[in-house]
Image (cartoon, rainbow, N blue to C red):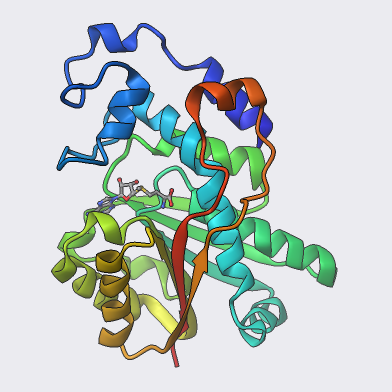
Length: 264
Ligand SMILES: C[S@@+](CC[C@H](N)C(=O)[O-])C[C@H]1O[C@@H](n2cnc3c(N)ncnc32)[C@H](O)[C@@H]1O
């Protein structure tokens, strides 16, 4: 992870802000622009390359850690079945740079190591943006060259048509529901449900805010999948170069609610 952080930090463009025409109102630097987009009704957008690099620097490791912790809470009989089959199909909805996939695949790597059994993994990542592709490809090539993956660009508000990909053993949604309306969340629940196999896992990670958590509970209720929810707040446990941390201020503690249900 240290190399990823160092490389993205070294690639920040210090001159980008002075020439920028799409700054968040009243921001005074790229970092300020990036942070203040999440507040005050500002537009959240990852169109800007500097914002994408800052997202990786500030949030990638902690979102990865949250999804790793979530995956550890998948019922053990489900994981046993995956290893007995030797194969698992995973769908990442709103996958962006791949932090959720990174957490899940790290967990599966640890399981494969401790069980001394191989597992083949196919990942489909959905995202509305194509600008994250380069980062996601980089993450997969650096950390998981053994996994096969593909990306599909679509707006989940228009439905999810993946007829050629078959069904999925797991779907992850990490920090997507907070960017959707309550109605869109319910529609998304239906779409994801139709793509999961019986026994498939739905894992949703997002901000620990009442409105967001209620939307997520409504999604599970809508598809009649019972679930467990976990509040994550401990140290995320990753190493990070001190000099870069002083500048970009990554989140070192997890801070999310993660919901896990198994379709019956
Ligand atoms: C906050 S990022 C989360 C990225 C990653 N899952 C994580 O946990 O760090 C939200 C992602 O959802 C994508 N997204 C937002 N709205 C979407 C939509 N309507 N359809 C598909 N993807 C969407 C964004 O492009 C972005 O990559």
